[in-house]
Length: 402
Ligand SMILES: Cc1cc2nc3c(=O)[nH]c(=O)nc-3n(C[C@H](O)[C@H](O)[C@H](O)COP(=O)(O)OP(=O)(O)OC[C@H]3O[C@@H](n4cnc5c(N)ncnc54)[C@H](O)[C@@H]3O)c2cc1C
Image (cartoon, rainbow, N blue to C red; front, side, top):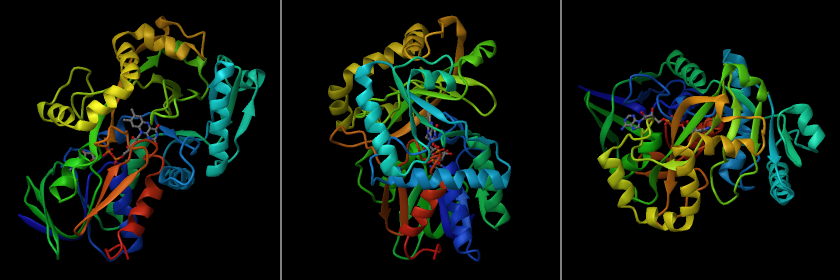
């Protein structure tokens, strides 16, 4: 069996679906075909995350993350309202627990203002307690534009839109190889070839493998970081009204253990950030020999480990001990007790790691012949999905997007 299409999109996570929809919006007459290995949309990162619509506070001014997060959050709220997807602008506080964290809060506020995040304001201890009665700190930054959303429902709504506009989505059809030529790109799949004039790869944790198969350099490699959550017992959910975050380490791309209310009312504590033995390591001990070998053979892994071994050890502590994990969150919600939590879900971050050992901070897009690859799209890419799709369409140049 062999199919042809104007545009093939690999991956039916939130990015692949947003890209397919954007292509159909820009060129309603074109054929767009999304191929996804799993039997449902949003099966990986899109369905295993914190569910937060980030407002754009953390990211380096001028970076793609900063611009696409601010634009993307605005577009996502509008999309959800139009499509009846559950979403709530509940706001969030970032809490400085000690006076020496205040400089970090100042820096975050300055970044947020430069990035154009709406409504930011500083709170003293009393102001913090008015918003989050159980939070404790010497000061806080309040972001009323931050919210919560059901990202899998966003993915389903995007998929519905793609199909309504004449696109195709083939589930259970994994791409096993790529042949790039001057006139077309051929995707090898278990269910026959798919020949396309152009392709966009949005393969999340597997993005580096497909990019290399299409002729891209091996640098950067995806290294999976498992994020485990705890869940508050239903009777203790009142400890958290919306979203409570610590002041993060600015040199790491992760935001620290936070408390997040989900759109279904559940309150999660987490996530951890521990290097994982598989790109789909939803269970702690899940290993894939191929994924593990890829991580261990990468020179960047050792360079990163030399720099971050202390952080790695404390993350291992959180993974091994629920009490240690709760202690991290108790710094800013002191009423939280180890008995208040239950085991929660987990997700695996697709984080690009350079050969030099640097965790790649910004979104990264790369071209190969007749194809564009999303090579690094960690948080806040779910928030930014619609803006990323527009960016990909702009970048794609002479594709059916035009
Ligand atoms: C623990 C955690 C917390 C997070 N919290 C937030 C948050 O609060 N807010 C936020 O904005 N972002 C958050 N993120 C980030 C966000 O979830 C991701 O940036 C976003 O989901 C990326 O979407 P994606 O479509 O690129 O990836 P994915 O959702 O992982 O989709 C990639 C798809 O490609 C498919 N695929 C891979 N290889 C192949 C192949 N060979 N053939 C066919 N299909 C293939 C996969 O099956 C998968 O469905 C979080 C992520 C994690 C892990």
